[in-house]
Length: 233
Image (cartoon, one colour):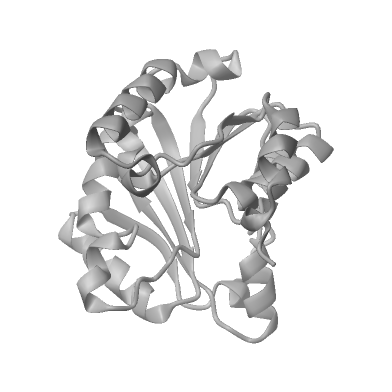
């Protein structure tokens, strides 16, 4: 049974209020009328947009992971880089519970988590506020008619361009070669600078690579992992 069906999750997250900032998914499907969605986004934006240094209580580079999974990546990154502020965004509350547990167990003070729809990213981050975005193993949305839902589509790239600081970056990993090829085309169309493009990440034995739960599982089955770094000028 999936954790999101268990009624105790919301109550358990109350113990992680210092880590999890928003526990309600902000999307039209859950909020109903568009007017209600806009009202909620406005409230959230007032608390967060342009205020992330205040939320963390310090000035530091801001790195954001879009889709945390169960938190192996962001918790290990934050542990390895205490000089950076990390924000993890996840659409599923039940999944975020596991992330919060890892953050608490590691006693990390440089991680904040929220349940949020990345389509509204510009509502919670000010222009130029983010230094780096991580997109790890996002939904490939394989049907052509769903291409605009892919997090590397040019529509999303233009949103990232706004919230990223000058020289900001995206670090992108996926096991889906079709999505990766599509993404490379989208990056080129948006005139972005590509670096460290690989179609078999683990063949490089990069000691700095931190694997997600998904990556650990499928690379162990022999699936090749694609990765690249994208810079916004």
